[in-house]
Image (cartoon, rainbow, N blue to C red; front, side):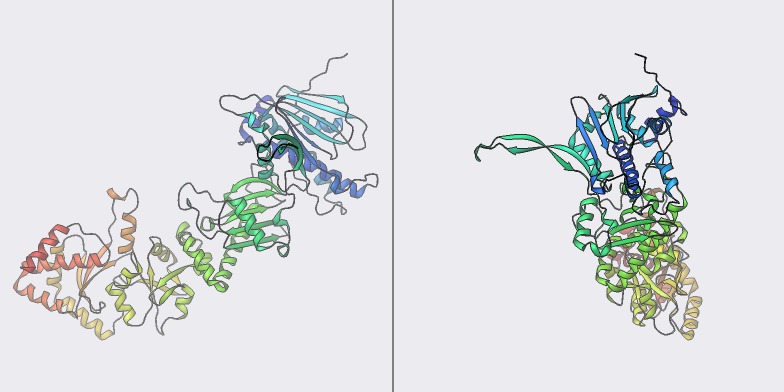
Length: 638
């Protein structure tokens, strides 16, 4: 008997195979996905042949993929009744790394008009098979091509090469037998010999393979004749179909109930509440894909933490190739979860490594547009639902406006909402501008910790007194977002606590200007008494009944100063807004200050510090000299 000759791999070296096994695939568990996908491809080819060849009498229901596990022999067996392979095909497809029979079949059948639409070859590169070497040290492939009376055994232990020998197989198809490696200190290979692990991997990666994936599973039952109060149990084996086969996103929307979508969402994405919105999308043309997206009703517990990872599940023809494809979602829509299934994505080396190609970018752009459109519809037609959504994720939309130097503000600006002085319901920018008073040019806003605090700010009371609406900004990001927007429908945003607030008539402006000029020496004295915490002291006519307030000059407001100084690491590098203490020219305190400047400058200095402390507290700013202020107040009471 002649010795069986081992053949070296035709095109690649030991180094390349080592790299594939140890580097390209980062998760060993995907070996089962790859082998199941190959089996599905083989059945697809056979099914296609049954539609075009009268000699094939198989129906779709005749096809299946089977998985067997033998713990004692440390063996996993994956078999199919697909087209099988000849000796030459075994040599070419398994003996040449990156040689793919599926890819060739796909190209050959592209111009065949009789090819049915539901034939979709998953495998495009011939390296997926070799992922099995990550978990096994010996692989045997027994295959018999349809129409051939001979079968062959391909066997390899890895980098040293392979052998192909004749063997016996009763029918067409392929059987792959993996001998699972022994456990090491770092790797538990035995986990892949557990039924529950096989079941979970099929459910995770191959649940939507269109052919049944069956396995004999161990179950238990009560032995006949044993009493119910003291039952005895026996184990038995039963065939079980592990995959659901029909993806819910492939069904017409009219065929799926809201309850079914909600159940799918809660099961797949581990939420206890129904999604607030389900978005379906089916696109055909330059890029073909199906998308099933969900907007949660609440933010995940870790949503605003570093641990949160955005992304959509990415499928290729029903086979999951990425758990989180972050490139499919912009950061400002990172709250969206769901999946995309496309047969057009180019897969590089393996299904786990996705090329950043045009198709992916087109899909991402279309999804962004779809999400924005659906949110706009929700805002217009389901206001209560949108407000619930906005409570959970409105902050993220504002971050989206601010990030990337405002590149996305056109997409997001009409989705923003703010509380305001108008009423209890949040208002959009479109609603605000739609009810602006005649002649109003600015969109007024004020920032603070709470709506109640903002409403008591002197400048806010002065603006609302004249009938203007003021947006209440209570989140740290709010003012930064509006600053990035700069304007909405040609209307600039104006912080009412900025020095640029202008509500007076020309006569009032002239009178105020004269008061500041005539009392410039006194105002300078007051500023010097207070110190560096203010840039200037001046009279104003925008405070209604309040004696004093803090405003700011320049781009950095009081609210932005507070926000930036609360950030980690800001303790040693605090920023400061250019603050101005404004005194109400129409309040009796103005006359008292003038009197003190003439008669008691020491007391005026004390008044200046107390007034500044009062203004800072109203604006929500801290005091660095609280003890001094308390002493000054006590002195004035004596």
